[in-house]
Length: 223
Image 1: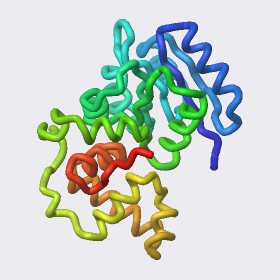
Image 2: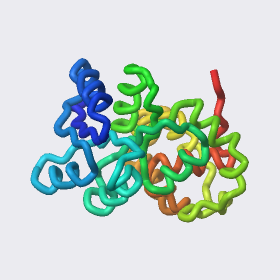
Image 3: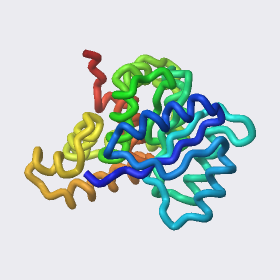
């Protein structure tokens, strides 16, 4: 796996420095920027040719909050993946973040192992939700009843193969792993993934996972 370039945005100096210290212990991750505000990160990005693969950001920040910063990144730098750090883990917050195009959602009380896993999974699979967060989505009545703004709720439009691939995506298989499992080419898997994004109206892989949970294509199992 290639080294993952990471930027961190958090207005709390102590917390940000703690994350930086943790990142220095993970050889697969290269920290390319840290900022105390969304405006500072956008200024950095506007002046560098080397964009980070992932931005790890706090949801609650003065001035430009995490949701607003994520929207700006999505418009200006759509290839950058966002992991949102927050104190909340209820399904309705996760649902809102995914509607906004966030790829991962992580509690600020997470362990170093969980943080490393989140960064790696977002880089390789395109999303990261803990089983507890997936379960929160599945159990949230508001989530089950609400019609997402961007989703096409007609599950019947999906083929058996597309549902099969969506289920494997939810289980965090990469395109190569799905291809090996189904005896098809990675390029074919990528084609199915793109079709799924268009058919469901999802912004990214995280959106596919939420769609699958909402419509019962993927059933969360808590170990």
